Every structure is written in structure tokens, then in C-alpha cells.
Amino acid sequence: MDVFLQIRRKKITIFTDTKDSSTVLELKKIINGITSQEVEDQHLFVFKDNEFQEQLEDNKTLSDCGITSITAKAQAPLTIGVAHRQSDGTFEPPSFDPYSLPPDLPDVMRPQESNVQVQPPADPQCA
Image (cartoon, rainbow, N blue to C red):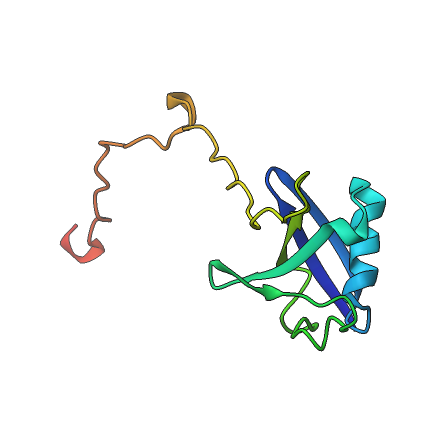
């Protein structure tokens, strides 16, 4: 079955889909094709319940890691965090920047308060 993923690192967001039978290593190859970051220099983490879960192992399938078509839907993709190897050989902690908020609406686009009072219809029996 297809799974839909949102892969994030710092200010980068990648949306992709793959099969739940794909391995974590195959997912890393997809990321490598987009970012040119070598697969051995990537660690992947599931982001769930507002925190990063355990690191995903290369030889496991996505379904073995709990990533299925139920948890990773097109309308609600599962977030995967990527950590890269730093120059000293250690891996950075997984993190991503929050999305920016849109600016406030200009006054001309805000809903206008109307002071017009609506009168109830006249009762036809009173006329």
C-alpha cells in the first residue's frame, strides 16, 4: 500500500510517497536523490506526538516501523525527521523549523461589523 510522507530537516520540507514494503534504506535513497546527502550520512526519525521517536533502522521496512497506509495518508502525511552527519562524525539532533505564520489581514479584507438592525416581519393578522 502507498504511504505518504513529509520529510523535514531545518527549513527543508519534502513531500513524497512510497510503498509500505519499502525499506528505510530505500527511503534514504529517495532523500539522497533530492538533497544529495549520502545515505550513510542520514538518520531518520518518526515525528509523532510532537516529539521524535526512535531512529529508523536501514534494514527494516516502513511497515515494520509502524508506517502504514493508515498512519501515513495523503491528506495527513506522516512526518519523518532527518539528521545529518556533522564534520566531526557525530550526528546533529533531529530538528526542523516551524512554518511561518501568515501576516494579519489588511483592514479592507476583515469582516465588517454591521450596525444595521434587522426588523422582524410584520404580523399579517395585526394589519
